[in-house]
Length: 421
Image 1 (spheres, rainbow, N blue to C red):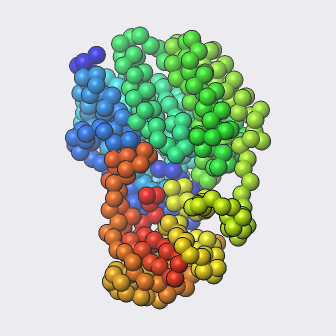
Image 2: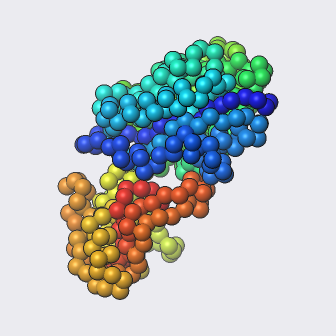
Image 3: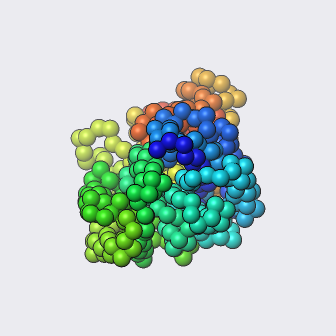
């Protein structure tokens, strides 16, 4: 179907509402793609927007670029910051003129200090601008907290099914297919939605293993039923601290609202019946380290999931690093600690120099006190990189000035920005 004009863009943030302070506009600007830049992208990277671009070009659609901006997970944005971003996106939409459809990349757990549901506000604002007859569809992160305010303005939405999120592009292509069928008059999308009062433990979200793999299989099976054109399961993001926190199910059917709601209810009930499966035990670092000493496997990986910068944490917890240094483990490495002062100190000293440095523990007392190290500067970097794994593949990013420090057998990489390389 050629000759169609489709607007593509998005405003994304995973908001850790319990953190003090706010995520300033400058953090969003680090991952800002203006409307005119967006249309020149190759469409080959593993992102939702690049998937939209590829899907549009496959179909011969003309793409009208909108703002695409993404802030690193952190505290809420101010209402002013949100308004600036939304105004730019809406101005881009106005400048595009009449469009046949709109495709948006949204997280689904974005909040400001005044709005519990910023994603719903974006969708409603776009709907108000384009009117009731232009198809509006979106793709959301698996950690979305979906709301009725997101469902009502949209014709269809889909949620990622993988953790780590390696299917961003795939889900975008799926929604592009629904957009094509809707524009052709072959599909009348209608959605059913059900939210659950359920918080999902992060280790139980990994889709490569049970029980999450069983949940994904259930979602795929629902998608294969006659009349169902899309099915999604969101696991929620508990740290946003909003009334809408929780897992949710969404089903899109071809014009059958009753079936859509029935299937969404069935999916949600499947999850609820297995609610004990979504809780995972966690270990204190010392206990985890003790377990590693009893295994012959190598290497051993310890995940400090509570300090995940990809989920809004500051990234400078020191408990694991302190254990490694105190026990003089050799070899051992901590990837990574967010500490711009330590990185700057290493850069000023230079490669090969030995420095006395306090690493980590600067953001909040709960992160633990800094670890005192006498470390050799083993490597220095400006922090720029390109993702080459399946998640974000092809995307350029930066952790800011970075350094590899080594204290006896313990190495630590210190970075300046709370990114998730």
